[in-house]
Length: 433
Image (cartoon, rainbow, N blue to C red):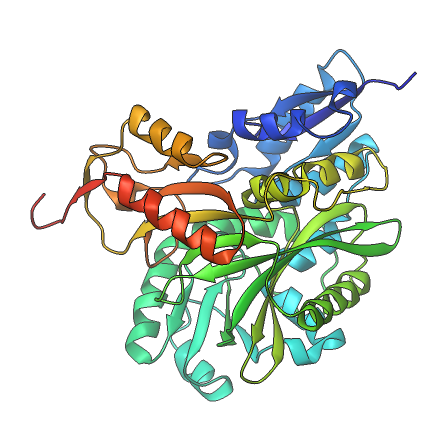
Protein backbone atom coordinates (compact mmCIF):
# COMPACT_ATOMS: atom_id res chain seq x y z
CA UNK A 1 0.00 0.00 0.00
CA UNK A 2 1.36 3.42 -0.98
CA UNK A 3 1.56 5.86 1.93
CA UNK A 4 -0.40 9.08 1.54
CA UNK A 5 1.77 12.24 1.44
CA UNK A 6 1.04 15.77 2.62
CA UNK A 7 2.80 18.31 0.41
CA UNK A 8 2.79 22.00 1.32
CA UNK A 9 2.85 24.52 -1.52
CA UNK A 10 3.77 28.18 -1.14
CA UNK A 11 1.25 30.52 -2.73
CA UNK A 12 -0.96 27.66 -3.89
CA UNK A 13 -3.65 29.05 -6.17
CA UNK A 14 -6.48 27.47 -8.12
CA UNK A 15 -4.56 27.21 -11.39
CA UNK A 16 -1.47 25.54 -9.93
CA UNK A 17 -3.58 23.31 -7.70
CA UNK A 18 -5.27 22.04 -10.87
CA UNK A 19 -1.90 21.23 -12.46
CA UNK A 20 -0.77 19.44 -9.29
CA UNK A 21 -3.93 17.36 -9.10
CA UNK A 22 -3.23 16.12 -12.64
CA UNK A 23 0.30 14.83 -12.00
CA UNK A 24 0.72 11.07 -12.00
CA UNK A 25 -0.02 9.37 -8.66
CA UNK A 26 -1.88 12.50 -7.46
CA UNK A 27 -4.38 10.24 -5.71
CA UNK A 28 -1.65 9.57 -3.14
CA UNK A 29 -1.04 13.26 -2.40
CA UNK A 30 -2.84 16.05 -0.59
CA UNK A 31 -1.64 19.55 -1.46
CA UNK A 32 -1.90 22.19 1.24
CA UNK A 33 -1.48 25.91 0.67
CA UNK A 34 1.15 27.90 2.58
CA UNK A 35 0.27 31.61 2.59
CA UNK A 36 -1.34 33.34 -0.37
CA UNK A 37 0.18 35.29 -3.23
CA UNK A 38 -0.57 38.70 -1.71
CA UNK A 39 1.41 37.70 1.40
CA UNK A 40 4.34 36.46 -0.68
CA UNK A 41 4.74 38.53 -3.84
CA UNK A 42 2.47 41.54 -4.29
CA UNK A 43 4.06 43.57 -1.53
CA UNK A 44 6.06 46.76 -1.13
CA UNK A 45 8.23 45.22 1.60
CA UNK A 46 9.18 41.78 2.90
CA UNK A 47 9.69 40.75 6.53
CA UNK A 48 11.55 37.45 6.20
CA UNK A 49 11.58 36.45 9.91
CA UNK A 50 7.84 37.15 10.14
CA UNK A 51 7.20 35.13 7.00
CA UNK A 52 9.19 32.18 8.32
CA UNK A 53 7.38 32.32 11.65
CA UNK A 54 3.97 32.29 9.93
CA UNK A 55 4.96 29.20 7.95
CA UNK A 56 6.40 27.54 11.04
CA UNK A 57 3.15 28.15 12.94
CA UNK A 58 1.13 26.62 10.11
CA UNK A 59 3.33 23.53 9.83
CA UNK A 60 3.59 22.97 13.57
CA UNK A 61 -0.18 23.25 13.92
CA UNK A 62 -0.87 20.72 11.17
CA UNK A 63 -2.42 17.47 12.40
CA UNK A 64 -0.48 15.05 10.22
CA UNK A 65 2.86 14.41 8.60
CA UNK A 66 4.70 17.17 6.73
CA UNK A 67 6.21 15.24 3.82
CA UNK A 68 7.36 17.89 1.35
CA UNK A 69 7.69 21.60 0.54
CA UNK A 70 7.40 22.92 -3.00
CA UNK A 71 7.25 26.36 -4.57
CA UNK A 72 7.22 28.08 -7.94
CA UNK A 73 7.64 31.66 -6.71
CA UNK A 74 10.77 33.81 -6.77
CA UNK A 75 12.02 35.84 -3.86
CA UNK A 76 11.20 35.76 -0.99
CA UNK A 77 9.90 32.18 -1.21
CA UNK A 78 12.77 30.65 -3.20
CA UNK A 79 15.29 31.77 -0.59
CA UNK A 80 13.29 30.83 2.52
CA UNK A 81 12.37 27.28 1.47
CA UNK A 82 15.92 25.96 2.11
CA UNK A 83 15.83 27.31 5.68
CA UNK A 84 12.48 25.69 6.41
CA UNK A 85 13.35 22.43 4.65
CA UNK A 86 16.51 22.13 6.76
CA UNK A 87 14.51 22.78 9.93
CA UNK A 88 11.92 20.12 9.10
CA UNK A 89 14.33 17.56 7.66
CA UNK A 90 12.94 17.78 4.12
CA UNK A 91 14.77 17.57 0.76
CA UNK A 92 15.89 20.89 -0.71
CA UNK A 93 18.84 22.64 -2.27
CA UNK A 94 21.14 24.28 0.27
CA UNK A 95 20.66 27.95 1.15
CA UNK A 96 24.22 28.64 -0.07
CA UNK A 97 23.54 27.17 -3.52
CA UNK A 98 20.22 29.00 -3.84
CA UNK A 99 21.68 32.36 -2.79
CA UNK A 100 24.61 31.90 -5.17
CA UNK A 101 22.12 31.68 -8.03
CA UNK A 102 19.85 34.48 -6.82
CA UNK A 103 22.61 36.98 -6.00
CA UNK A 104 23.27 38.10 -9.56
CA UNK A 105 26.84 39.23 -8.91
CA UNK A 106 27.81 36.13 -6.92
CA UNK A 107 26.35 33.99 -9.70
CA UNK A 108 28.52 35.74 -12.30
CA UNK A 109 31.63 35.34 -10.14
CA UNK A 110 31.11 31.57 -9.94
CA UNK A 111 30.10 31.24 -13.59
CA UNK A 112 33.28 33.03 -14.61
CA UNK A 113 35.27 30.32 -12.79
CA UNK A 114 33.79 27.33 -14.64
CA UNK A 115 32.09 28.59 -17.83
CA UNK A 116 33.93 31.87 -18.58
CA UNK A 117 33.01 31.84 -22.27
CA UNK A 118 29.33 32.06 -21.31
CA UNK A 119 29.75 35.23 -19.22
CA UNK A 120 29.73 38.84 -20.45
CA UNK A 121 31.90 41.48 -18.74
CA UNK A 122 30.24 42.45 -15.46
CA UNK A 123 30.64 44.67 -12.40
CA UNK A 124 28.73 45.45 -9.22
CA UNK A 125 27.90 49.02 -8.25
CA UNK A 126 26.07 51.04 -5.61
CA UNK A 127 23.19 53.00 -7.20
CA UNK A 128 23.75 55.77 -4.64
CA UNK A 129 27.38 56.20 -5.72
CA UNK A 130 27.66 59.32 -7.89
CA UNK A 131 30.92 57.96 -9.34
CA UNK A 132 29.38 54.68 -10.52
CA UNK A 133 28.67 55.82 -14.07
CA UNK A 134 32.27 56.84 -14.79
CA UNK A 135 33.59 53.55 -13.43
CA UNK A 136 31.16 51.47 -15.49
CA UNK A 137 31.93 53.46 -18.63
CA UNK A 138 35.60 52.55 -18.15
CA UNK A 139 35.15 48.92 -17.06
CA UNK A 140 32.32 47.81 -19.37
CA UNK A 141 31.52 50.57 -21.85
CA UNK A 142 28.25 51.34 -23.60
CA UNK A 143 25.90 49.71 -24.21
CA UNK A 144 25.29 47.69 -21.06
CA UNK A 145 22.43 46.40 -18.95
CA UNK A 146 21.79 47.25 -15.30
CA UNK A 147 19.60 45.47 -12.76
CA UNK A 148 19.47 45.03 -8.99
CA UNK A 149 21.54 42.27 -7.39
CA UNK A 150 18.16 40.79 -6.46
CA UNK A 151 14.83 41.32 -8.21
CA UNK A 152 12.49 39.40 -10.49
CA UNK A 153 10.39 39.74 -13.66
CA UNK A 154 12.84 42.33 -15.07
CA UNK A 155 11.91 44.69 -12.20
CA UNK A 156 14.25 47.73 -12.36
CA UNK A 157 16.14 46.32 -15.32
CA UNK A 158 17.33 48.87 -17.90
CA UNK A 159 19.39 48.98 -21.08
CA UNK A 160 21.99 51.76 -20.90
CA UNK A 161 23.11 53.31 -24.19
CA UNK A 162 24.52 56.54 -22.76
CA UNK A 163 24.78 58.86 -19.73
CA UNK A 164 21.14 59.98 -19.86
CA UNK A 165 19.91 56.39 -19.77
CA UNK A 166 22.09 55.69 -16.75
CA UNK A 167 20.87 58.76 -14.87
CA UNK A 168 17.25 57.77 -15.53
CA UNK A 169 17.87 54.18 -14.40
CA UNK A 170 19.85 55.31 -11.36
CA UNK A 171 16.97 57.52 -10.19
CA UNK A 172 14.48 54.66 -10.59
CA UNK A 173 16.78 52.25 -8.77
CA UNK A 174 17.35 54.63 -5.88
CA UNK A 175 13.60 54.96 -5.47
CA UNK A 176 12.76 51.26 -5.72
CA UNK A 177 15.70 49.10 -4.68
CA UNK A 178 14.84 49.16 -0.98
CA UNK A 179 11.93 46.80 -1.67
CA UNK A 180 14.39 43.90 -1.82
CA UNK A 181 17.61 45.16 -0.20
CA UNK A 182 16.97 44.65 3.52
CA UNK A 183 15.17 41.28 3.29
CA UNK A 184 17.79 39.89 0.91
CA UNK A 185 20.59 41.05 3.21
CA UNK A 186 18.91 39.20 6.08
CA UNK A 187 19.28 35.97 4.11
CA UNK A 188 22.85 36.72 3.01
CA UNK A 189 23.77 37.04 6.69
CA UNK A 190 22.89 33.35 7.12
CA UNK A 191 25.76 32.11 4.91
CA UNK A 192 29.51 32.55 4.46
CA UNK A 193 30.08 34.68 1.37
CA UNK A 194 33.23 34.38 -0.75
CA UNK A 195 35.67 37.31 -0.38
CA UNK A 196 34.77 38.78 -3.79
CA UNK A 197 31.11 39.05 -2.78
CA UNK A 198 31.33 40.29 0.81
CA UNK A 199 29.91 43.77 1.18
CA UNK A 200 27.90 43.52 -2.04
CA UNK A 201 24.35 43.06 -0.83
CA UNK A 202 20.75 43.61 -1.79
CA UNK A 203 21.22 47.36 -2.11
CA UNK A 204 23.74 46.94 -4.93
CA UNK A 205 23.22 46.52 -8.66
CA UNK A 206 24.86 44.57 -11.45
CA UNK A 207 26.04 46.03 -14.73
CA UNK A 208 26.98 43.70 -17.54
CA UNK A 209 27.72 43.79 -21.22
CA UNK A 210 24.84 43.33 -23.61
CA UNK A 211 24.22 39.75 -24.64
CA UNK A 212 21.52 38.62 -27.00
CA UNK A 213 20.31 36.28 -29.65
CA UNK A 214 17.78 33.48 -29.52
CA UNK A 215 16.72 33.02 -25.89
CA UNK A 216 16.16 29.53 -24.54
CA UNK A 217 15.34 28.34 -21.02
CA UNK A 218 16.37 24.90 -19.78
CA UNK A 219 14.17 23.23 -17.17
CA UNK A 220 16.14 20.84 -14.99
CA UNK A 221 16.94 19.64 -11.48
CA UNK A 222 19.65 18.36 -9.21
CA UNK A 223 19.23 14.96 -7.60
CA UNK A 224 21.72 13.07 -5.44
CA UNK A 225 24.75 14.87 -6.84
CA UNK A 226 23.76 14.78 -10.51
CA UNK A 227 22.23 17.49 -12.71
CA UNK A 228 19.51 16.68 -15.25
CA UNK A 229 17.75 18.71 -17.97
CA UNK A 230 14.40 17.50 -19.32
CA UNK A 231 13.09 20.37 -21.46
CA UNK A 232 14.11 23.46 -23.45
CA UNK A 233 11.69 26.38 -23.94
CA UNK A 234 12.25 29.23 -26.41
CA UNK A 235 11.53 32.81 -25.30
CA UNK A 236 10.50 34.89 -28.29
CA UNK A 237 10.73 38.65 -27.81
CA UNK A 238 8.80 41.62 -29.14
CA UNK A 239 10.55 43.92 -31.65
CA UNK A 240 11.65 46.20 -28.77
CA UNK A 241 14.01 43.38 -27.75
CA UNK A 242 13.12 43.66 -24.05
CA UNK A 243 9.57 42.33 -23.64
CA UNK A 244 8.50 38.73 -24.20
CA UNK A 245 6.02 37.92 -26.96
CA UNK A 246 5.71 34.22 -26.12
CA UNK A 247 7.34 31.17 -24.56
CA UNK A 248 7.19 28.08 -26.79
CA UNK A 249 8.01 24.43 -26.19
CA UNK A 250 9.83 22.46 -27.40
CA UNK A 251 12.72 24.62 -28.53
CA UNK A 252 13.38 24.95 -32.25
CA UNK A 253 17.08 25.76 -31.78
CA UNK A 254 19.59 23.38 -33.41
CA UNK A 255 20.22 20.29 -31.30
CA UNK A 256 24.01 20.92 -31.01
CA UNK A 257 23.28 24.38 -29.59
CA UNK A 258 20.87 22.95 -27.03
CA UNK A 259 23.48 20.37 -26.03
CA UNK A 260 26.07 23.10 -25.42
CA UNK A 261 23.59 24.90 -23.17
CA UNK A 262 22.88 21.70 -21.28
CA UNK A 263 26.59 21.04 -20.75
CA UNK A 264 27.16 24.56 -19.42
CA UNK A 265 24.16 24.23 -17.10
CA UNK A 266 25.49 20.96 -15.72
CA UNK A 267 28.97 22.37 -15.14
CA UNK A 268 27.74 25.43 -13.27
CA UNK A 269 25.06 23.74 -11.14
CA UNK A 270 27.46 20.93 -10.24
CA UNK A 271 30.14 23.49 -9.36
CA UNK A 272 27.90 25.24 -6.80
CA UNK A 273 26.50 21.98 -5.40
CA UNK A 274 22.88 22.60 -6.37
CA UNK A 275 21.01 19.44 -5.42
CA UNK A 276 17.58 17.96 -4.65
CA UNK A 277 15.57 20.78 -6.22
CA UNK A 278 14.33 22.03 -9.60
CA UNK A 279 15.79 24.98 -11.48
CA UNK A 280 15.56 26.76 -14.79
CA UNK A 281 18.43 28.49 -16.59
CA UNK A 282 18.08 31.14 -19.29
CA UNK A 283 20.56 31.19 -22.18
CA UNK A 284 21.12 33.14 -25.38
CA UNK A 285 22.44 31.75 -28.64
CA UNK A 286 23.96 34.40 -30.91
CA UNK A 287 23.45 32.84 -34.31
CA UNK A 288 25.87 35.23 -36.04
CA UNK A 289 28.84 34.39 -33.79
CA UNK A 290 27.67 30.97 -32.54
CA UNK A 291 28.27 32.15 -28.96
CA UNK A 292 26.17 30.73 -26.13
CA UNK A 293 25.61 33.10 -23.19
CA UNK A 294 24.17 32.31 -19.77
CA UNK A 295 21.68 34.98 -18.73
CA UNK A 296 20.55 33.85 -15.27
CA UNK A 297 19.55 30.93 -13.06
CA UNK A 298 16.17 30.64 -11.33
CA UNK A 299 16.00 28.33 -8.32
CA UNK A 300 12.57 26.96 -9.11
CA UNK A 301 10.62 25.56 -12.00
CA UNK A 302 8.85 28.15 -14.14
CA UNK A 303 5.10 28.09 -13.55
CA UNK A 304 4.80 29.88 -16.90
CA UNK A 305 5.85 26.60 -18.52
CA UNK A 306 3.36 24.30 -16.73
CA UNK A 307 0.70 24.50 -19.42
CA UNK A 308 3.32 24.04 -22.15
CA UNK A 309 4.65 20.79 -20.69
CA UNK A 310 1.15 19.49 -20.05
CA UNK A 311 0.07 20.17 -23.63
CA UNK A 312 3.18 18.54 -25.14
CA UNK A 313 4.22 15.88 -22.61
CA UNK A 314 0.87 15.06 -21.03
CA UNK A 315 1.66 16.34 -17.54
CA UNK A 316 3.05 19.58 -16.14
CA UNK A 317 6.56 19.68 -14.75
CA UNK A 318 5.06 20.28 -11.32
CA UNK A 319 5.49 16.50 -11.19
CA UNK A 320 9.27 16.99 -11.06
CA UNK A 321 8.91 19.34 -8.08
CA UNK A 322 6.64 16.86 -6.28
CA UNK A 323 9.04 13.94 -6.77
CA UNK A 324 12.04 15.96 -5.57
CA UNK A 325 10.14 17.29 -2.55
CA UNK A 326 9.47 13.68 -1.54
CA UNK A 327 13.10 12.67 -2.09
CA UNK A 328 12.37 10.62 -5.21
CA UNK A 329 14.05 10.55 -8.61
CA UNK A 330 11.76 12.19 -11.20
CA UNK A 331 10.72 10.16 -14.25
CA UNK A 332 9.24 12.86 -16.44
CA UNK A 333 7.41 11.69 -19.61
CA UNK A 334 8.17 13.03 -23.09
CA UNK A 335 5.79 13.71 -25.99
CA UNK A 336 2.64 12.17 -24.54
CA UNK A 337 0.49 15.29 -24.79
CA UNK A 338 -2.18 16.55 -27.19
CA UNK A 339 -0.03 18.98 -29.20
CA UNK A 340 3.41 18.84 -30.87
CA UNK A 341 4.06 22.43 -29.71
CA UNK A 342 2.61 24.79 -27.11
CA UNK A 343 3.06 28.43 -26.15
CA UNK A 344 2.30 31.04 -23.53
CA UNK A 345 1.69 34.32 -25.37
CA UNK A 346 1.64 37.86 -23.97
CA UNK A 347 -0.76 40.44 -25.36
CA UNK A 348 1.09 43.70 -24.69
CA UNK A 349 0.89 47.44 -25.17
CA UNK A 350 3.83 49.78 -24.78
CA UNK A 351 2.29 52.97 -23.42
CA UNK A 352 0.47 53.65 -20.16
CA UNK A 353 -3.25 54.37 -20.22
CA UNK A 354 -6.53 53.90 -18.42
CA UNK A 355 -8.40 50.68 -19.19
CA UNK A 356 -11.97 51.54 -20.16
CA UNK A 357 -13.01 48.08 -21.36
CA UNK A 358 -11.81 44.51 -21.03
CA UNK A 359 -13.23 41.50 -22.92
CA UNK A 360 -16.25 39.93 -21.25
CA UNK A 361 -16.25 36.40 -19.87
CA UNK A 362 -18.50 35.26 -22.73
CA UNK A 363 -16.16 36.80 -25.32
CA UNK A 364 -13.20 35.01 -23.75
CA UNK A 365 -15.08 31.72 -23.60
CA UNK A 366 -16.06 31.97 -27.27
CA UNK A 367 -12.43 32.40 -28.31
CA UNK A 368 -11.33 29.49 -26.12
CA UNK A 369 -13.96 27.28 -27.72
CA UNK A 370 -12.94 28.39 -31.21
CA UNK A 371 -9.36 27.26 -30.53
CA UNK A 372 -9.55 24.01 -28.48
CA UNK A 373 -6.94 23.74 -25.75
CA UNK A 374 -6.65 27.52 -25.41
CA UNK A 375 -6.82 29.35 -22.08
CA UNK A 376 -7.04 33.15 -21.85
CA UNK A 377 -6.27 35.06 -18.66
CA UNK A 378 -7.16 38.76 -18.59
CA UNK A 379 -4.56 40.72 -16.62
CA UNK A 380 -5.79 44.31 -17.00
CA UNK A 381 -8.67 45.64 -14.86
CA UNK A 382 -11.36 47.94 -16.16
CA UNK A 383 -11.01 51.42 -14.69
CA UNK A 384 -7.37 50.92 -13.67
CA UNK A 385 -4.19 52.43 -15.07
CA UNK A 386 -1.83 49.97 -16.70
CA UNK A 387 1.00 51.36 -14.58
CA UNK A 388 -0.85 50.00 -11.51
CA UNK A 389 -0.24 46.39 -12.60
CA UNK A 390 2.25 44.56 -10.36
CA UNK A 391 5.77 43.57 -11.43
CA UNK A 392 5.69 44.50 -15.11
CA UNK A 393 8.90 44.83 -17.09
CA UNK A 394 10.23 48.36 -17.59
CA UNK A 395 9.01 48.75 -21.18
CA UNK A 396 5.48 47.33 -21.58
CA UNK A 397 2.19 46.33 -19.97
CA UNK A 398 0.61 42.89 -20.31
CA UNK A 399 -3.13 42.97 -21.01
CA UNK A 400 -3.69 39.20 -21.23
CA UNK A 401 -1.95 35.83 -21.15
CA UNK A 402 -2.90 33.33 -23.83
CA UNK A 403 -1.99 29.63 -23.51
CA UNK A 404 -2.41 27.61 -26.69
CA UNK A 405 -1.24 24.55 -28.58
CA UNK A 406 -0.46 24.03 -32.25
CA UNK A 407 1.31 21.97 -34.86
CA UNK A 408 4.38 24.18 -35.18
CA UNK A 409 5.72 27.70 -34.70
CA UNK A 410 3.78 29.14 -37.66
CA UNK A 411 0.53 27.61 -36.42
CA UNK A 412 1.13 29.04 -32.93
CA UNK A 413 1.71 32.54 -34.31
CA UNK A 414 -1.38 32.39 -36.54
CA UNK A 415 -3.62 31.29 -33.66
CA UNK A 416 -2.26 34.03 -31.43
CA UNK A 417 -2.99 36.71 -34.03
CA UNK A 418 -6.58 35.49 -34.45
CA UNK A 419 -7.12 35.58 -30.69
CA UNK A 420 -5.45 38.98 -30.34
CA UNK A 421 -7.83 40.44 -32.92
CA UNK A 422 -10.80 38.94 -31.08
CA UNK A 423 -9.98 40.46 -27.67
CA UNK A 424 -11.61 43.89 -27.44
CA UNK A 425 -9.55 45.97 -25.02
CA UNK A 426 -10.06 49.74 -24.96
CA UNK A 427 -7.46 52.02 -23.41
CA UNK A 428 -7.47 55.79 -23.09
CA UNK A 429 -4.12 57.52 -23.44
CA UNK A 430 -3.06 59.66 -20.44
CA UNK A 431 -3.89 62.96 -22.15
CA UNK A 432 -7.41 61.73 -22.99
CA UNK A 433 -8.10 60.16 -19.60
